[in-house]
Structures are given as C-alpha cells and as structure tokens.
Length: 207
Image (cartoon, rainbow, N blue to C red; front, top):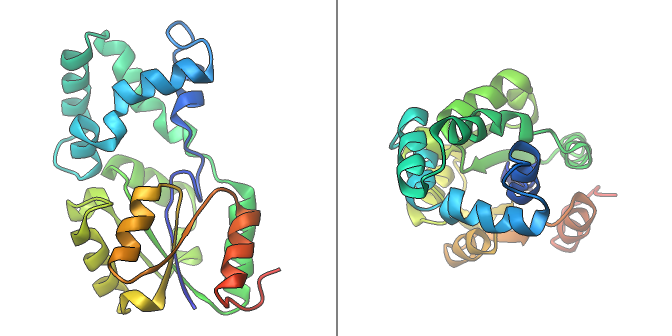
C-alpha cells in the first residue's frame, strides 16, 4: 500500500493553542485563550501565514504583515515564528507506526503544508529520506492544501494514481479535498486510531 503522511499534527507535534500558551504566557493564560489568539495569528492558515506556507513570502515578510495586521510588537511576533521548530517535536507513537509500516513493506510518502525554513529544519533534524520514499512541502511547490494543485503535484511526483494512495491528515478540509480527488483518506487523531483505520482499509501487518 502507498501511505501518505501529513506532518504537522501527525508526524510532528503541532498544537497552536498550547504552543502560544508556552511561547506567549503574558498574552495566553490557557489553551482556550490560545485557540483565540492562534486564530488571529495563523488565520486558519490563510492570509499572511497561508502565503508563508506556500513559499510566496519569506519569514521577515510574514512577521511584518502579522505585526501590521494585529498591532502586536514585532519582537513578539518574531519570537513565535522563531519558536515553531521547537514545537515540531517528533511524535514517537507516529514514528513507531512509520517504522511498523516500513517493515511490513508499504511505501511511505509525505504531503505537508510547511514553510521552507521549517522544511529545511525537519530535513536537518530527522532522517526523512529514510522514513519516506518521496514527499512534497508546500513552501517548495508554491501550493498548499486543501487546494487541488498540490494533490496533483504529489500524485505526479510519487508516480501514483490518486486512488492508490491512503492519506493521513489531521484537518477535515484536507481530508475532504483529497477524497474529492479520488484519494483514500483517514482523519488522523492519534497513531492508535490511525492504525485501526489503516487495518480497516486492508493495510496488512498493522498491529
């Protein structure tokens, strides 16, 4: 089977509400408040951050735009942007699932909305080329999920028909977009539930 992993919230930790509570304790006192501030900061991955995700603007530009849009001090906005790599910690349960799938002989790929500086960081910090046969980062192809072009780019790069891919992602909009294009898709909540969902799709040798 051909299994395609999202990164943030699936392979690597990404929980903006708790992330902002950690980085901005003077502004964010709990996770509920963090969710409100995250909606302002990341704009649901549209707007300024969406352009950063797609590689259309660089880190300095996204910092300047968020500062202008929100009125938050530039140094504080820059702090959040700089701290994202520390948030992207490997989720060990997903790493175990990846190893399990590889040992069972399945082909593994990735499709991630990720600004290029963070993609570079992940490549330096983890053996992505050992875990995955190939992958697509939004910041390098100038397109992002849930839009159609990035799924087409991934399918072409992997040399696979959409119906031959099983996509794991934690955002419902991305799952719906993949399914509309013919991909099999599983909404990721945790590795244990993903393992069960993959088994139900006929992925063999999943514990």
